[in-house]
Image (cartoon, rainbow, N blue to C red; front, side, top):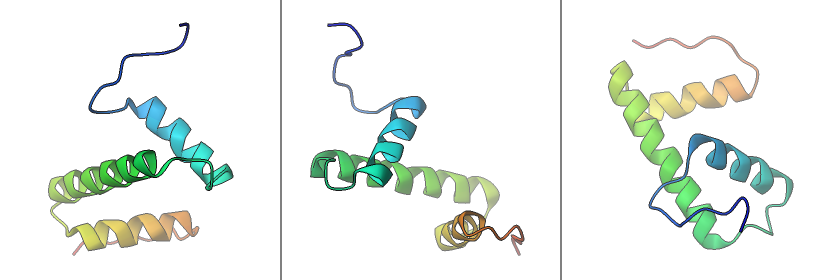
Amino acid sequence: MHGCRKPSKSLTDEETKTLQEYESRYPNRVPEGIKQQLKEMQESDAKRAAEFLGISVEDWNNGISMLQDGNEGISAN
């Protein structure tokens, strides 16, 4: 089948972005298993980013929320 790929443990960044966009448009059409996988990937990414920056995951998530809300000021103490 054209465009299909074998199942694997993780999705590519492009696949993740596509699924997130689809979920935001059609939240009731995304199967729970895929929603859970996206959530786990986001949590894992947040943890890695926070560790890299030397901040807590909570601070990372707060910073992301501020950016999504249009606020540009983020400070890491």
